[in-house]
Image (cartoon, rainbow, N blue to C red; front, side, top):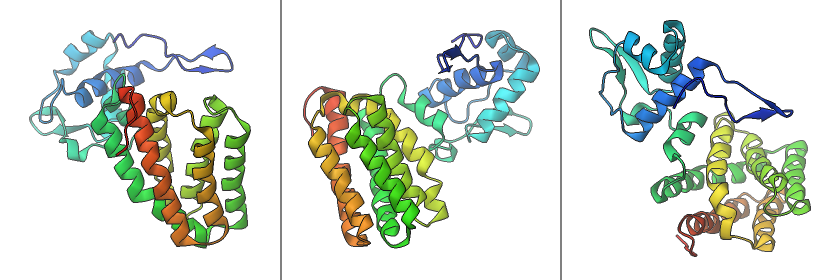
Length: 250
C-alpha cells in the first residue's frame, strides 16, 4: 500500500487526507497483524523503511510510536524495533480489530468477538437494570425507537443498533465496563456488513432488543441478563450465516 494514498473517509462531502505517519502505521500494522511480520521479528532499519514507504524519518518515528501505543511494537536494547507477542497487542483497539479482520472476517474472528460480547454485555445489562439513571434508560429506549423507525438494512438502523448497545454499557454504572463501549461498537461494525446479509427478519430483531430494554426499564437484572444472552446467540448465527451464505446457529 502506498502511504501517500488518499483515505476513503469523507466528511461533509470532502475527502480527508490522512497524515503520512498514520498511513505508514496502517501499512506496517497490517503486516504485523496479518502475519507477514511475526512476533519477535525485528523491523528493517529506519532508512530502509523510510525509503520503502516514501516517508521522512520523523514521519516513520511517529508511525512506530503509534504502533507501540497499540502494543504491536517495542524498542529492544541492542536489537531495534521488535514485533511484540500477540498476547501483548491491544486487540480491542479500533485499528487492530480492523486490520485483523482483513477484507472479510473469518469464522474464528466472529466467534471470538461474540464470546467477548457474551462475557460483557449481559452483565452490563444486569447492572444497567439496577444502576441506570432515568436519563440512561431514556437513552437506551431512544436508540430502540430509532431502530424501529428506520429500515432494517439502512445506515440509520445500524447506527441506532450501535447506540443501543453502547448506551447499555455506558449506563451500567461501572466505569470499567463503560470503557468497552468503543470496542464493542467496533466489533459490531466489523460483523454488521455480513450479519444483515441474510438476516432480514426485522420483527425478530426488534423484539429481541425490546426484551432487553423492557427488562432494564423494569429494573429486573436477571431478566436483563437473560434477554441480552438470548439476543446474542441468533446475532452470532446471523453473522456466520452471512459469512457462509447459509443459515447457521452456534
